[in-house]
Length: 353
Image 1 (cartoon, rainbow, N blue to C red):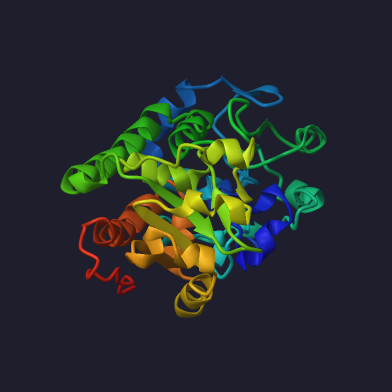
Image 2 (image 1 turned 45 degrees about the vertical axis):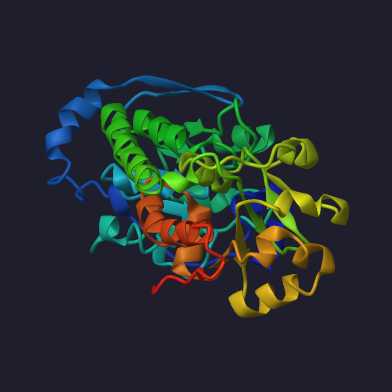
């Protein structure tokens, strides 16, 4: 289930298992992107040098990066959205060429896919990263240790995770803007963020029943694993107008999520409960065999939303990037609307795709 949550916080972002691919060139190739980026080149160059603060200090970037490696598990989407292709990405969800999901595939187009690196919980593949000759390493949505940061900094400037959040806890808005600044496209990044925020605002306005309702995201990993307020998935719900359970962070502690005890099953008794599962039918049946869970109103009134983990939709729910979010909203919002419409006869349907 959920790739065994990736051993510790690497599964932070949701806990699927991981994947493949090979060589790349992307924006690192001197000829690639020269035409499409020509209009922005002068303004991008004028943005440098820039200094970006993070958990381990600050990093100075002196010139526009050409060869970008993303160690952060979702950082590639912000890079792609800003018109560049990384020379290396870090796999997480599995099955995608260059570790680029279907919501971002049009940004890659016919360009060469990035080399895909792996991190099984022991840290970035240092030698392979060095071999890619990066001039910028992004680890914004990540959990680098200080030692790993210092090692990678021998090869290129490294932008580590922000100090203000838990590892893997940076909001997608700040992630996008940090990466935009690192690429000399701070204004463009803000515009991208504003566009997606407008999508959330419209979804909330179109569904006034969301406002003030309680909701939570969970997965039946080794029992019942619930995501806290600093997790990107939980922020999806609050950005749509939902509230999280009052005691959620008190129970979870300073983590992105945690398994809850049987005594705190009440945290799941919300107006809408989003389950990320391996098999919708099997996991729903298994959950409802638990007497404590089955007795909750959220279960008895069928206010559950089930998301199949190993699907493009399920992956988009976990990815939470500037490119995956519009794709995700098209599928999740109708499910949430069905869950909170006040009619127990309303079935929460699975998306068509």
